[in-house]
Each structure stands twice: as C-alpha cells, then as structure tokens.
Image (cartoon, rainbow, N blue to C red):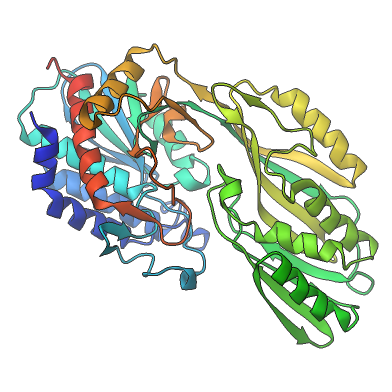
Length: 468
C-alpha cells in the first residue's frame, strides 16, 4: 500500500479538518471551568468536535466525563494507543502574530495557528491515518484507540482521570514531538521559590512585578512598578534596552515608574531559544533598587537565572548521555510589596538525575538567599530501550517512509503522553532540521509534512496492529 499517495489524495480533507480544529480556542479557562466542564468551554468543544468526527466515520467513541475521550477501531484483546491532545497554550500577545492565532491561515505552504504543531496538526494527521487504514479495509488484530486529552499543557489531569476509568494500552505512541522517535523523556518538576521576608509599600522601591502565565512557556512580557527613583532612572532604562537590544516601555504615574520589557516566547524545554522578559527586567532592576525586600527579590532572579538556563548557580545542573542537560525556566514571576515575591520554575531534568540530592542542595542555597524552595509537581523521567520491539518497529516505519537512515533516536525535555503509558514513546511529527515553533508566536505546521506524517502513522498502525 502506498500510504503517502493515499494521504496526498486526501490533502484537502486533512487541511479542512485541521483548520476547523485550530479555529476552536481551546486554552484552559479556569473562569468557565466547572465539575461538568473541568478545563473550560474551549477544550471541551475541541474534544467533542473530534469525537463527532469519529462518530461520523462509524467508529466507537466514548467521552470520559468531559476530561478526555477516545475513538476506537479494530478487534482483539490487545490495545494500541495513540495519545493526542486538543488543548493549547495561550497565544500571548496577538500583535506578535503575522496571522490571527486561531485562524488556520495558509501561506507559503504552511498552516499558521496556535496548536498547529502542538498538538492539533499531529492529532489530525493521526486521525487521517486511522481513516486511511479503515478505508483500505485492512483487518486489524488489535484494537486501535485514539485517546484525546484536554489538559496536556497544564498537568495531564485529563489522562490521569481517563486511566482511572479506562484500560491502559498494551503499547502506544504520542504524535506530539519529533521524528524519528523519542524514547527518553526528561523528568518535569515545577519548583516554587518563595521569598521569606516581606516588605511594605511605604518603604519598598519595588511595588509590583509580574511576568508569565504558564511555567512551560518562556515569558515574553514583564512589567514592574517602581517608586522612589531619581530622574536618571528613565535614562538608565533606555540605556539598558539599547545595550541588550530589547524593546520596552516606560510610563510615569503619580511619581511612580511603570516599566515593561518585551521578550520572546519559547517552550520551557528549550528556554535558551527564548528571551525571558522576567529575567531581563530583574537584571535591570538589580542595578537600580536598594531597599531590602526589593533588592533581595531581583538579585535572586538575576543572579540565578540571567544567562544561565541550566541551574548551575543552584547546583541543579546535570546531564547524561541519553537525555542531555537539565534546564530551568522561570515561567511565572510575581512580586507584591506587601506579599513578597515568588517564582514558578519548570525544570526538565535528565533521566538519571539524582533528584533528592540535588533539590536538597538547592534548598540550602535558596534558604541562605532568603527563599524557600518547594516541589509543586514532579513527573518522573520516562525511558524505553532502543532495543525494544515497539521502538524498532516505529523507527523502521519512519526510515522506510522518509529514506532517513541517519538521524538517531532522540530524547526530549518536553513531556508527552508517552510517559503515562506502561510502554509508550513519542513519535513525530516534527521532522529533523525542522524548526520547533511550539508555544511561540506564528506557530505553524508545514502542509507537506502534515501529509507525510499521516502516511507514516498509517503504516505504523498497520505494522503494530495487524498481521500484515
């Protein structure tokens, strides 16, 4: 079966369905969340949209309490899981987008939208693969189940709930990362640094400081309100912006300065590819502030995180051969003169990381600087051996479909649903040398690669779930 040709013949259908899905703003919405709508209206709408597509194809579908759902085909005792998600991270400042982030605009062979590559594009490619296999009439000896989550970007609560009620796949893959295949996923921990000593608005120079919405995104905007400064403050700020080639703004209200710095968003697994606006704002204020609580707060951020994505100052740095360097991203940073300051850090740590030892050392360091360090969440690393049959089969499918026999298997600092399976890996759909634009403005998927991925996933389903 020529799966690539089959996918090409249905390219228009593939694009149309992806456009429909990305036009649903499925960002977590706590304001509209209820017991019946656990993550807000947008994620639920996207889930129901995809389940309705499954019903139209005559396949079995199930909605698990509006947390997650599945579309299933095939027969057999064993279950092949394809784990996807339809929630997305916020679009950020829409002024940074060339096209509206929920439009699905096609230009230069690319489809632009939030979620185009993470993870709605890969989800639709896998959905098309299921339809291709079904329409080809291939008999399956395993059940093939697309499991659709709605809270991947904010904690995996969707699949945690799903697997409390539904069976675990025998084997599976998550089309939510890179080709050829990712068999090592770093651990993901959320660290919270909280300032011990609080100040007060009458005495402190720093009135407020805010940046970031999600720990898993590099903040692209940071804002602070400062008082008790000389007229030189404005000139110093402009000099700092020029020196660091940054954009920013300054307003004066009632003798207070309100300043912002614009950064560049990126995924927390690769913080070096972004420009952390919070860290740069702290680096500027470090040279301007003198009152105790204000100075201690910006000193900690600047000393620990400025020009260091790997936690070396905190002694959290570590790397291994199978998964690379540990990284840290200050994703949410806040300070109020009456409440003190806090930082939520997304740490992506290596597979063999000595977690307890390293965290204890970092806690001792933080305490000396006037901060506590708490673990808010911790998802342990995930690893499947290169020699495993699942890994060998999927990598073989990729190499046959692409002719790429050179690119090695990969590790990632990102967390995919592969880690919730007993035996699962991340499988595409970002191709080698293709830029990773997930969580950034102007996120896109290359249409040609979308078609190619559908063909790869179709062959993978046949290889893993039929007698061939």
